Length: 116
Image (spheres, rainbow, N blue to C red):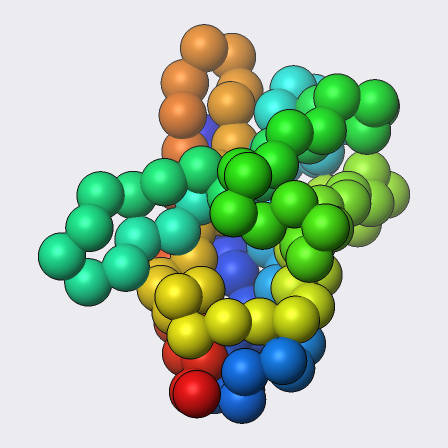
């Protein structure tokens, strides 16, 4: 089992920044892929960004490339999502996601709201 706790969401104006954090209950060293997904009202959950254990494999959705940065700190069992130049269309619940031992785990989600 892996328990995930997200934080850092909130309300921000367009053009602003937020930093999301997700702490995993298991040592991040043993977790292969960590990532962020989001779900806007009435839409399906979609990939935002993922990062592999060593941090060499990073993947971004086209809609956030150049604005969002994913990183992880293995010593703190934490993955981060730095979000800059936020747009109203980035408004969604953001979920932390890990792949561990063939299973997928989700956090409870954190709301990000970007006002125009």
